[in-house]
Image (cartoon, rainbow, N blue to C red; front, side, top):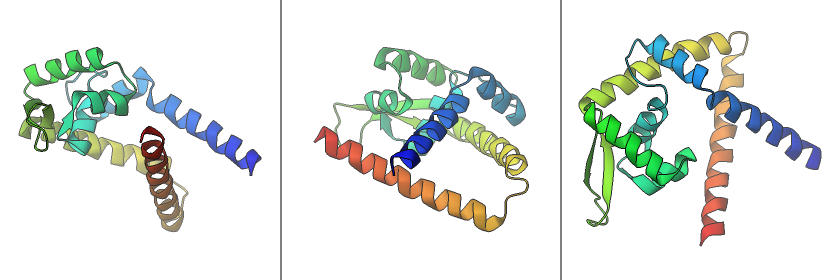
Length: 152
């Protein structure tokens, strides 16, 4: 199993490396036909996917410093893409949510991601893609559960 764990870790490092590259973010933004700083688009997508979300959780999910994320969220807010509201579960906490304008932007990003993925998966069967998605979702749930158990 350890050779598989090593191979899995190497593959994940490759995936994370590609997903963290500024040039890849800029390409996605260009492909989507939107005007958004490449450093802001991953945060906007995370707010859309996981919101309402607090700044601390958003920073943790993005592997960034809380103060940096807070400044970046302020930039998204000034562009009308997100807004801060009282958190549903704890009124002392401010949660970030995507606005209609931000949703339109993430919809354009999703369409661009779909086009790019279709090219990347050219030559894969539908069954292979389904299996990959299913196993990655299962892996992600396991990682989140394990990380949560480690914190508690």
